[in-house]
Image 1 (tube, one colour):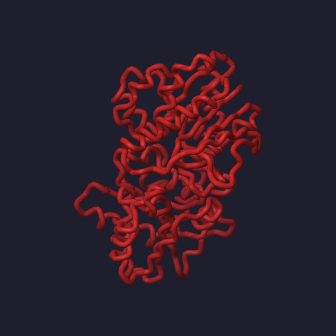
Image 2: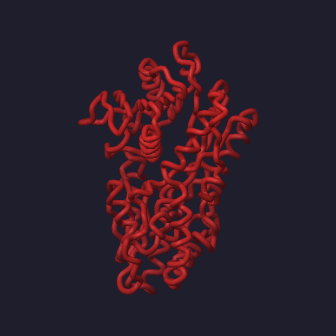
Image 3: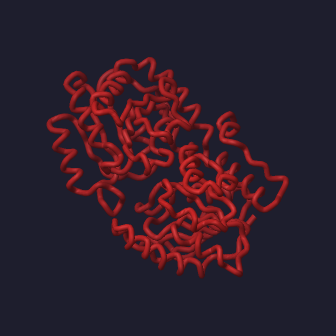
Length: 389
């Protein structure tokens, strides 16, 4: 099968340091498709030092000049338009076109030289644009909450919308070799964009409340605060530093995937208090934490319900409450006070996450691609079947 994948104009694919969750996701899936014997072409934004045209790990990469995100929606949509027009001319003939930018699916529907099935990947809550994609074969999304939002906006797409959960790189996100030691100094970790919508200020404020009770516990915030990398900017970081006051809170900035996995393996607790009601599609960060045997403390967003069971593989707090900081502090106190329970839940969390490797999720996509192409031999495993493997 010939598969072409295209990502947007603002972020590059690994090993470039300026890559996002979508770019990492499709980079891993592209390699998994290639390992399974498929011909894969990947078009993405170029990054200095990366070849414009190369084949690596069985994937043919074509890189184009992209843009910096402005933070202004009309400007960024215009940049996406120009990028998509240039990318359109480079699309090779393929059986499946898996597209991840705003305008490219619209333009690709009118190609005359490429009759491949169009798959539009929707990783963020729709904002009225779905009618543009009426001619595509598949809308692929990452959670049941996202599927419901897509169907609510465009009921006609119910029959072509499927859920494919985000995979975890189970090659690096694994439980630590030695069991976690809850004696001595302990660490709560957050990984992700340091942005107000991620609720990092709630976490720092909650930690400031519980820190005097647990002087052996520190907080580590890992992720970008730079606006160009999706962070909240210097003003927000300064606000967090003031909230942290004199308590042991460390802001490390972004780190590469292997170091991130090591940071999770050496941590004792994980918290992801996202407030993004219409911005959090799945929640890769807590899923990666689960893969290392951590029990995530998360907000009550619908997307987390696909893989976190409150009181079994994680703890959920009510982020919508007027007392959200106090409720988060209480949830963190619960995990700190019950290390044996965390060990037990952590094993369950790791076992659940391990079922969503790149290879297994790639199998689900491949089966669906066969279905789109009318190949009766391709059968698609459901999310439940994937989790049970």
